[in-house]
Image (cartoon, rainbow, N blue to C red):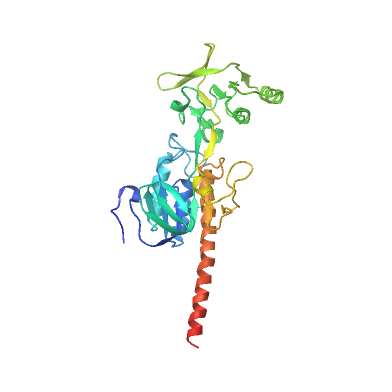
Length: 326
């Protein structure tokens, strides 16, 4: 029985079937959708809940995904939603506010779903530095992942903003795509070793704090410092602070490691029985293709775990039936 009408666009349901789901997946990015795809094909009863706020929404294209290189991220998600719907997976638009022990999934202003297993694939948010122009140009010509975006700005004058210790490695890496890379230490306290390594790679330094990014004609034109100097640049790279959306996991008691991220095994299984996590919520380095693979791996493990429970239940019932007929 359906409790409310369907939103036909993209196969998204605004309500859910009665009964217990084998798996409730929270998050419909690459990890969540790929997990749901495999579980749907395994004929599991699956619901995917998504708030519709993908991390890579500002990007025009995604790269490094075999057969999908250059595809807009929104198109990948649209294709994924259609695919899981064809296997009977329910995609529910909404936000999960809490998952109680016993796996009662509570949605903001919506129904409560009961699940046998949980997969959290809620991703992360990029905490950007407070420099005027960074947020406005984010995903356009202010970028973060060389593997995702550097090829598109190859051989152009690039900037690396020293707003995070990770910017040093980012700058060293970017020399593979351009001979003209300028490092702006900004407020970052570089060590002598950092400077030597950057200089050895042929990077130039522009000292001083950054005032704002210079934008004209809907394009980044340069970096302006507080002393008024402006350095022409075609694109800038920033290393954001990655903040996982892991509140649902920590509420359930999932432990974090020394790095501050929820700990999982190779399949995405957390330390809490019946709870898995996949994608950027547990690995900030996972690109779209890697996140999809993590979702696939988690789905295999989830189905195997459910199978063991199903078999144990069947054996108990079989024994009870045999005993009653003696």
